[in-house]
Image (tube, rainbow, N blue to C red):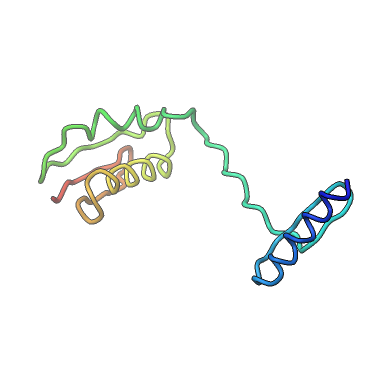
Length: 112
């Protein structure tokens, strides 16, 4: 339809005047330059929530100056470490804990 093309061309003039980057496709016509899309998230090695359900019982009631040991179980070291540090930073705050990777477990000390 002619009216759609006219509307798109009007919008394109506004975008070009503002200096915006854009890519518009209408049927078989295209305007602007292609914009890179975000890459998809990497698929998790484990089912959603399984890491947190393994970790939560160990860190649920930790008081200041308490230390806990979280066994790796069926999970790899980096996945457990990432889950624990993300959760603790969100819930306890940055700098309020120390984490140490031991042979078969992750040790957590709550500082404040």
